[in-house]
Image (cartoon, helix red, strand yellow):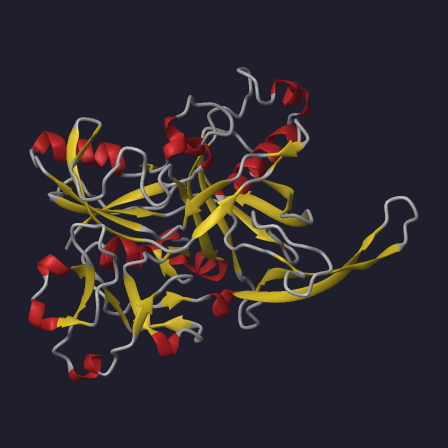
Length: 402
């Protein structure tokens, strides 16, 4: 099902980084956007048990009714487009892949129109490579920009990864898959998001008085109110395995701010057909953060320059486009203690692979292993409530190298 979650007010999603109240250098509460999949996983389970309180006794047991809940995708949605077109593909946005480049001087604008794709250096004409490689030496190959023959494009020489921007799903599935860049507009946070700073002071739990040197500041987010339209932006979750009410309310974020949720008619987004594609070389795009044992590499890749075997497939990692890590944690309400902290690579990361034995059978296995699957090492743990595969970490899309 596709579930829309629309906040009524500001919202605050805390990061895993600590802050020291009262210190000048670390006075701000750290906030993250978008929130990690584990937050949505907890919110969905809370909705279920709110409507089925008699089943709360089975939470986190073998009889837990939410065991089959799986988050298959996390998106932004333009509700105005949805109301007009009733089409998810035109209304949904996902994090822009990190091998998409934008002009440095256009990062502050609401929309980015002039983009280019990084490509494997080995596939490019060496005389037409623009600038330095964008990946480091541990990899077999590197990513680079190909110089354009178009004079207008030649003026844009300062580029950077379009990290923190959002791409429309219809552009991702039709143009990114085909290696086309024409008429793609990336959405920046200035288009849909506002920040509001709030200041507070810690209160003594006994005297109920303000404590000295305990002033703090928190940055909240709010979806912009699009004055020209009746609707703005919201979150959209693609989930399976749990029966929820068609609509209702929930509390969202660290301050439990109110939000509404409702299901829409379309059960899932239309993704590109990949059955007829060639995958001798392919990309794995991560639509949500992935928790990996070796930092930016999964546990089955010990040496990024050596071939490896995974589910019977002989593969070689060519290169990776990633951003900084994010800290993923949480709080266990039942055990009344913090959950273990993990580092995760950001949504939008792209892994480039080569299939060393590209038979028809192996190509089909590549699709089964990597497309719409969980690219996260915690998925290898015994399945149950709280595993990364069910929470939605590392949701991957298989992309042919155009």
